[in-house]
Image 1 (cartoon, rainbow, N blue to C red):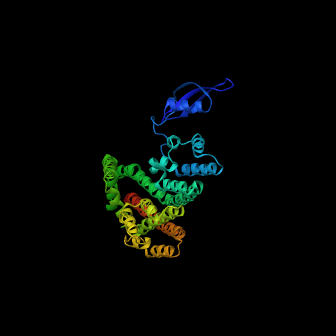
Image 2: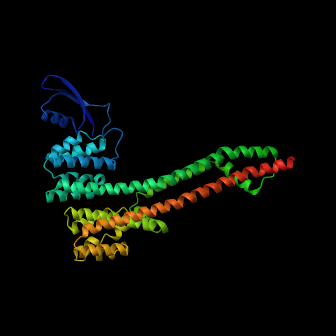
Image 3: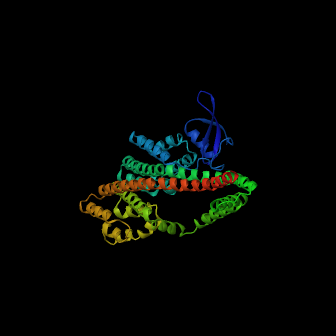
Length: 402
């Protein structure tokens, strides 16, 4: 969506120039004329990049979506009409891609569509849970409350992801630093010592020959590992386009001994939290279960749970239908049964999600505490091997010289 530079004349005769994002020059002109302004000229603003330029700011961050919805809820509660609220917030949004989406949504609402229907084409950006929450709020006459519950939902998920990322930051930096240090030693330090030993015609020990051989081979034929890395990147990129790649990769993740419980329990937590939100918003179990299943990030779990909606449609309880998938842990199944028997399924699902979130965070912290010393030990052994390969010949040369 491009920017247009508009020359406008107000009631006092002053000329104002504004640059706005709009679907077309005609839509831009109509918008200003609706505000009572006289439009003198409209032309493309090539100094600013819109949708047809380089895609700067195409990514919409979670905090942008949260901020938009918080302001939207505040305006709706204050009595603003939905269309007026959208147009007001669209003018304030800084992210270009999000502003494009909101302009299109406002246009669809202006044509008479419901808000949930207008957001439907952008489910990949806002998630199906968001459109389902909007639909439930519209049908129940409590749009602001439904969006507020969604805000709490997405905040919890975003906080969980942030904690996981922050926990993995230090080990990642440590691993990267280790590779950088190894690269410096192999490419710059060891070749210098190799020339030094060659000038003395010293008899080198086996460890020195091996390390020096690797260092010289990497310094001379560096393009071979670079080509292999590039080829591997291309191969992975093409494999990702295959329909079953994500399914096979997610199934392989669940076979990792320590990671299986982390991915499995995080999927159970996200499913429970999503289903609880939709049930609390007033959506029926049959209508919410399909959306909750698709919210799980693991494709293998999604495929295993694909028949759950059909089983519920045939009259089975949620606990019985989920138990046949073999995905849910026994404790989770017991909590679901308690929620069904006590007629408090949404509350129990929220409690279950909190419980498994805590378990996942604890296991990730344990994994990090295990990874850190392992990386340090491996790095220390590698550096020690290089130092030994460098200094042992020096000691031999000194001993011979004496």
